[in-house]
Image (tube, rainbow over all chains, first blue to last red; front, side):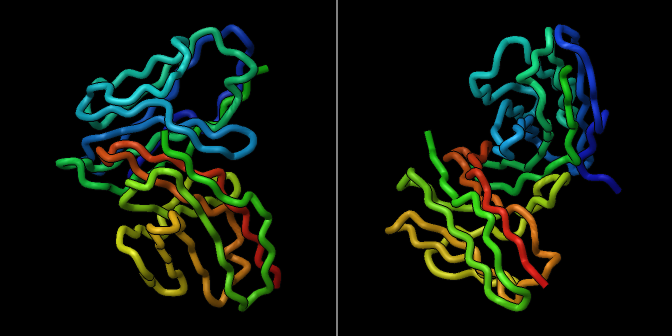
Amino acid sequence: DTAVSQTPKYLVTQMGNDKSIKCEQNLGHDTMYWYKQDSKKFLKIMFSYNNKELIINETVPNRFSPKSPDKAHLNLHINSLELGDSAVYFCASSQVTGGLVATQYFGPGTRLTVL
Amino acid sequence: QKEVEQNSGPLSVPEGAIASLNCTYSDRGSQSFFWYRQYSGKSPELIMFIYSNGDKEDGRFTAQLNKASQYVSLLIRDSQPSDSATYLCAVPNNAGNMLTFGGGTRLMVKP
């Protein structure tokens, strides 16, 4: 069974378009994340949601809008795509209870290419 | 803002040797540390988690933590070509709901 899944796996689109990436986890975790991994392989947190509430927004442009309809899903919508948005986007989840450190489990990633 | 530093490599070792991967961190208050492995084109997967000074062993992997020197390392004994990957060090924030990753070290194990 897939623990953290993302769709689509690949996304190729033109500059200026709007696109969405979906993420679902079946681990029962209370916290979900979006990470961006650029061409130099640097993995950087974008957003973190705990029980559908945004708790971390790491200075991401307003063109990126996450939405969490329930604690098992976290979607990412990107408006007016730019060349610099080309990257691999990873969704992750963890169970964070009482501030304890928790392992994050990653989805397979979505490779976004903006032409 | 926490900073996590790793040598980008590549670190090349012969099969059967010990690979030593290093990570330094800036926040002296950091309590715990993760090592993730990422194969090319794949997602990061957890290898080790350590929060106490000293060594933690799991099979061929040993994590070493020295909080006084703000240094955490990962040793891979009897390295295999299948260990060739990028190894990422990560440090959580105090709330445990965010990881700051180092840039990763690319390991190449040559047969």
